[in-house]
Length: 275
Image 1 (cartoon, rainbow, N blue to C red):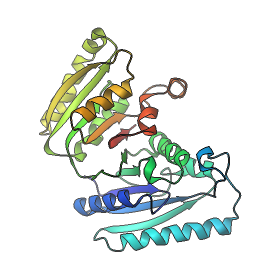
Image 2: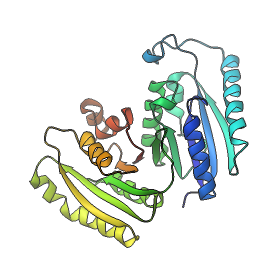
Image 3: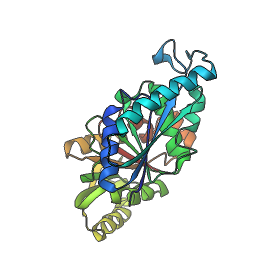
């Protein structure tokens, strides 16, 4: 049951599609919506953030934040749900460390993709903070995301605590009786066979909840796990792809580039990331 939703943005104009989608979701769920706006100082060259950040006095940052809050408040005032708009201002590094980590408590956190953010560096690092330290599932949506209960969802499965959390977090985001594809990506058939028992348990669990659950095995070969999962989702009209985020040792993800990083960088469909 979703009764508290937190949306994190940094620019009211760019984020307008996800703001309206989050408001509609809150209305459908009879939930409260909190919108947290991140305000950092200006950048000489946005593409080189955060290294080109300009100094701005605290009073100026606070004024900029107040203007952003007012712009969003004007939008949510026309909604029928209970909504509040909060601000968080700091230097770029401080915002990335604090986003979604302290303050509002929610059942789910929502962020938009790169097109709905002013600063891409802040979006990616704020998302990582939410996943690693927020303790709340994160949905990353695009401009077309309805944030309605999915008719067909998929979960990328490898038996881990993170994937099991994603399994549970996915249930309230799929419409009753909807379709859930449980997808494993293996390098060879032996690895796929080793995951068969846990996949069967996931399918059984979703079936017990009334969903049409089916198992799918993918052999990645030279293709990355992220590419294989994304290709499956796009090819089967999946509306929401769930993943257990940062399932490996953190340093390994940083060095090798994990599935989580790849999905956060360029999401081509709505994602649910849990840890």
